[in-house]
Length: 341
Image 1 (tube, rainbow, N blue to C red):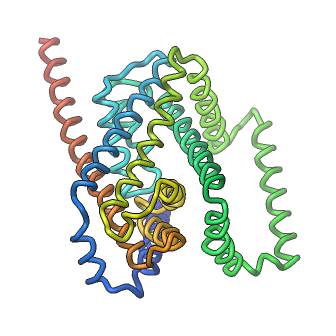
Image 2 (image 1 turned 90 degrees about the vertical axis):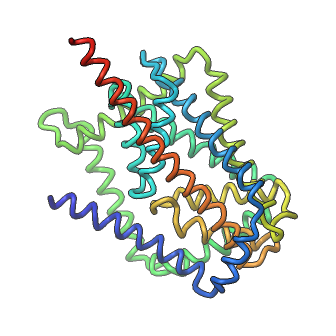
Image 3 (image 1 turned 180 degrees about the vertical axis):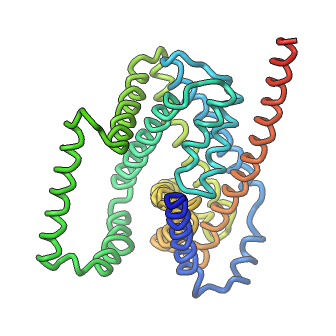
């Protein structure tokens, strides 16, 4: 009961951070003006971005099935896709719960072991982080001055101002000692075989699943297709970002390099541990667009348009997945009962 209460407070705290960032972004803006500009957005380009998003989901589902095949499982692509939709839907309520939700949904519908699925999802997340890093390197090559200025003005300087107390030698010494103590505790836990704590067993199990997940890539028959889908997913993410520029007159002039830049900073915003990247995405994207001569208001309009569209899409697909999985479960139950009779 106590742990559930603490978890509830944690997620409420994270949500409040997201709302705080949202307020920080919109506090000086004319909401009526923003609403007016949103109503003028070109729906056709928005529809194109939605189609691209669905294509990215589909490609991600195919890649997930490929990760499961070396483990001896090949669930139906439709069930995998529904589980994926459900996972993204769950993330809107509780950050990072989507990974567990989609594993549970697929394990229930296709009888794939939950622990095996967790390992594949962790591998996916590591690969996504590597792709985000690769995208950052590409942006650094294409727009080094803009990226360095953005990080300096919008990330490093604000953090240095907030955490200026860390320059105190006593605080630094305390942090170093705390880090060394933590490393020592983890080391002791790793070598302790008897009477292992539940936490130690859990950590050891997670590390085992991560290792097993990466081994599946080495055992794949079609590693080339796996790499293709990995890059194809992020290429679709880039196109989703870029085509949305044409929805608004204020951003229609931006080129592909700007699209790549917004993909990276938007990815950082969506990686923030808040529900659906709310607030964090709006703030960081609107700030980033100002480097390309877009006004603060127009940057917020673009960020709001993209985030709202993708959120509504995830909600729709999540509800659709719930209905389809329910129908599939009912059919399977009826078939099993008919077989028994």
